[in-house]
Length: 252
Image (cartoon, rainbow, N blue to C red; front, top):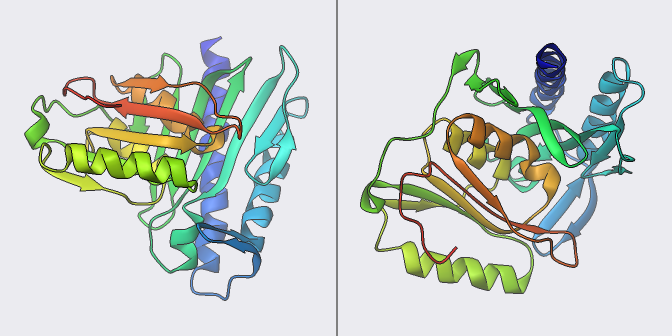
């Protein structure tokens, strides 16, 4: 079983890095917009990267299911499924902010088994598999040892709906004078990778999609942290709190 998980972790690493290389090659080019909303933008590049990821995975795991931000089909019971966000942080990419990542996870019947997150701007490749710990560029990572809230750095994710934005603002108000710093950086996958590597002490998101956090959530737990995922909203969004497990979090 372990060798199978290691193979899937290796596949996630390889495919995430390949997709990231394509992203890096597109940096600075004119990006074609498929659709634009108040709090979101969809790029042709999102679809192209996801197609590349799906093709590369299917060359090795032909019988597996595939679910991505740009479409896909949910797996049947007992079928492995790859859960992918081709560009987590598309708005950052579109505005030229070098903070976005490729996120790839493999799960079975809802349980994430392995995953990888690749940041093409920093050339940082995070990976994990169940029972196998987590690493960044091959070096093992662990969550922060900080125990005091006033020494902690928290990331709070702003979602796209009015209700979740208001909730996030409440959290900003609540934590603002209690922690060392608050951050909103625009990539759930990287926020989770940063919690796993001890750069952040916690990440709280009131409405996020499973493809944004599947790989990162496992990464945090394998790095010694704690992840709580709340019930899905009618639109499929989930609530998530990920932390080192060492700081006292409230109002989450």
